Length: 88
Image 1 (cartoon, helix red, strand yellow):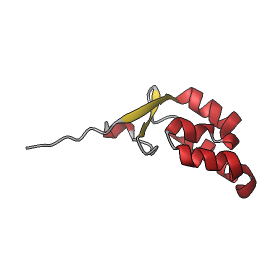
Image 2 (image 1 turned 45 degrees about the horizontal axis):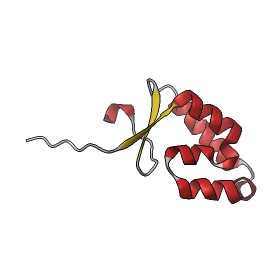
Image 3 (image 1 turned 60 degrees about the vertical axis):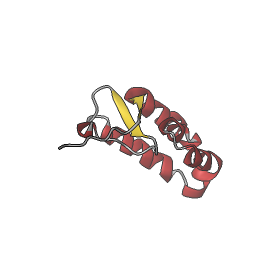
């Protein structure tokens, strides 16, 4: 017997996500879109200052790398982690 478990997911348009990540990543917009409100607030308040802009840059690069793996939308689970499209 095979059991399948479905995980609730959040879908975000990948082009909109990458653009907002580039222009407003230092404000934590990408983390809010992923559903990570706590990290979004932290990034908004001290993320740019504390990491000298490295954190928004790394998030943007990760989004660019993941861009080719997804067909239409980026998929995140309820915790905001990336869900690989082959796992669906």
